[in-house]
Length: 539
Image 1: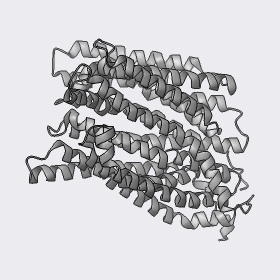
Image 2: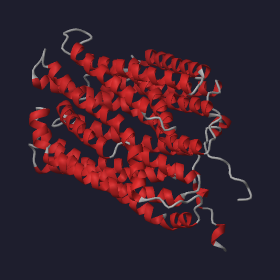
Image 3: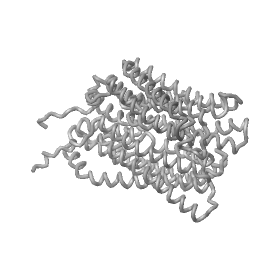
């Protein structure tokens, strides 16, 4: 058999395959992540105080990460997808190699800075000395994530997101089991293991998990190397490009993409300071820390669960839109955007409804030893639908090369959130305290999403399919009404937790029946989501 009969691109995924591969991974990751969070929060030595320490450490970690690697997967995937779309696989691989070298150096510097500034940050900035050990435990992860981000970006750009899906699944499996095993051993050896030590072990698990994730990605890359070499040898439209030109191209794309998460991370760090300081207006430091732990530990974990699924749509959109844009095949962009939006809202809408109407039942079921925060969860649940829409918009904008709007909106949103935090949190009323922090976040998310929607509608001339959104809204209302009817009928007959689970399961079944009846997503519509051009049979 001749080598030129090989079709290296035959394994490329469609857009829908990419989305559902990532979604399946997210289901596993989030379930394990919830197990991880439940285990820690319900452990007497951890609780809401442990969540507060972990959240504060992760805010600092995320800030450094936003400089060193956040935005890298999207930037690399966009550049690789553009090169691959025109047959320049040699150029695509060169982008990967240079990115790997560049961000490895940046990652090492980031890890060094985080480790050696841990004491100063904990004592002087956060004013939580317990955070120091956790920051040190997380510091090696900066380097590892920088490298992982480049590998993910390369595979995503090659339309092979199943690799990313598997990698993040292995990461979460390692993190969950490592945490449980090591903490149980530590608790067995010493009956007086403090909160600070347990938190540090949990954060060290993040670094260990990143190491396993990197090992898998490197192994897969080596496994695919022969195919990659063949693609390089058979590249078309290749031009000899100087390394510094590629570096400039990578930086030109990655910096704007990194600015948005960097500003967001900066805002969250200011959040942690303004929230804790604002809460101390009406309570002592220990109580304020626990309140902050409820918001950032339990509530944010629950809110981020459904958002991870809409986030997969945004992740898959970037290389798909970039590839289509380079081929000038965006005639049906509005249909694809609308269907992407529906996929994102498919889980976001019912999740928001469940959190709002069953906030107390959810917290008692998941956190029986620390179930405070019902009202905060209700307020925060309203953000789910808003953020799901914003994530899709961001994926579209990055895919077409417009990073300006996401940067502007995140700056506006951050400023609004901080100002509202300073105004609302010190208030001793319903809209004050920790509720004020949740309200501030909700308002800033609404404003950011409205700006993004306006730009998409007026500058790209996209028409939002309101009909299908209304169908989805009616399906969600049907889900809640059905579950509430079952809940009220059974609530005095058996255990409340069992009744809640039964009512939700029946509600979900009814929800998907309505989706099928309304024909919101059928097989033909899903196929039209694919951005991949069908290859001629002669190839």
